[in-house]
Image (cartoon, rainbow, N blue to C red; front, side):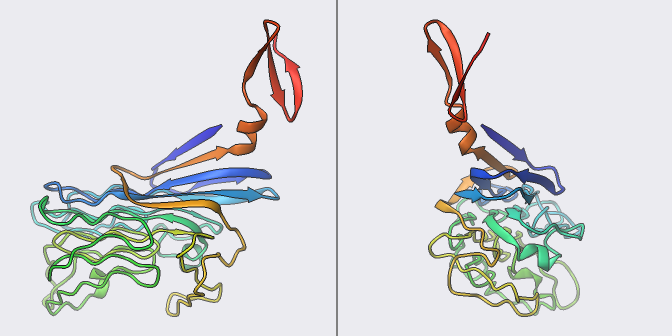
Length: 297
């Protein structure tokens, strides 16, 4: 049995009973002006639950076509800026946490943000369909190599935009949980840029912005942070297991798999196995529940 959780713009709370579950996350895609937006990433894994456990789902919002207020997309998609909407905002990441955010923006609560056990990155906002698109996902998102192209989030840091036009606001770079948002010039005016995709670490702004990186506790190549980390001092452990001890197996992370808002699919593996099917037995339907047969009238 599977349940799909779609974007709502607010936290969704689930309580999982003991058992085995497959969890799949899709990050949101970036805002697309002319075919240049990055797609959201995909993550999956199986988790064993030993006791009733509460999880908090934060599902990314698809990027818009930029805005004049530098308003970010839900769950870390960086705002793009253009006076007539020609620079896409980044898509928000989709994640599962063990601590609920106490702030209206779920990426502003660091204690909640660091409790993420699975993250599917958002794609970068787009402008040009002929340039490299900033897809989100994987251990490192996608970004370009040009001077004004966005740079992707990695397992250790947000994307650093190489173009530095005397900006006084460093938010154009990706951060832990956040894509870069349209930079401000030294005079305080908005710079025309696309917003970076959210993620474990977000991608930077750019002419086509970059995607963020994904994270799965237990996935080879991921780099978990220590429980003692703070917003001003993030300590990486050099191994993939989250400090909570919650670890996935049979994991997978793929770059650039989703267009639109993010989503989460949770499949109760035990339910699927134990309720194998309605089986035909001497012209009578029988349901098997926990190994016991039950005749259906």
